Structure formats: C-alpha cells, structure tokens
Length: 146
Image (cartoon, rainbow, N blue to C red; front, side, top):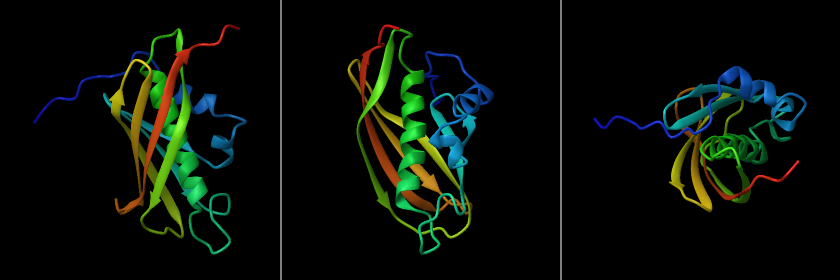
C-alpha cells in the first residue's frame, strides 16, 4: 500500500479551523471540521431543521455549502502564505436522500497546480453510503494586500 504524502503547506488544527467558522454560514449550518489527514480534510454537518428542505430531507444547497467549505479551506492550506484560493466552479450530484443524522464530507485533491486546483468532495451518511459527490475548482491568486 502506498503511503500518502502530506500536502499541507500551512500548519493548522481542528480547533483553529472551527474557530474561523464562528459567525459564518458554516457555524449557522452546524458544520464542524473533524479530521485532517496527510492528504484530506473532513467535516460533518447535521441533517436537521437548518439543513433540510421543506420535504424533510437534506437540502442539496446545504450539501453544496458543506462541499465548497471543505474544498475551499483545503485549497487554501496547500498554497504559500502570499497566495489565496477563490472558487471558480462547484458542481454536485445528489445520489441519495438523508432525513436525519449527520453527513460527513471528505475533500481530496484531484489537481494542485500553480494557478488552479481541483478538489473532489464525497459526502456520506452515517452508514458510509454516498449522498453527494461534488467537484470544486479554485483559482490560485496573489493574496490581496491589506
């Protein structure tokens, strides 16, 4: 079995990532970062009144927020300090409905380039069944001067 290579250029931890989410849509939807591996970032989101559509199942838009959140944060962790990543395109295929519980999204890099990155985000239910598969493309830009 091939050993995974650590792709992160910025040091972080789950507490720091979760603290950055305060007072954002991420916190509003109950998204929490739960794992950082050598080459993946993972977060969970509850399926409850905040994330359900009127028919009582997980809203596809909430899945896209989870996917874009994890992918964008992961993208920004693999660039140098003078660079930032901004979204260009996100798509999602909704595979299975979820009525309650927690879904887990895992982002892995498909392509980490100088000017663009592509991330695959798989969202699964508590039985590890695929709920949504999403792909996020970001542009790598110079970090804006403050």
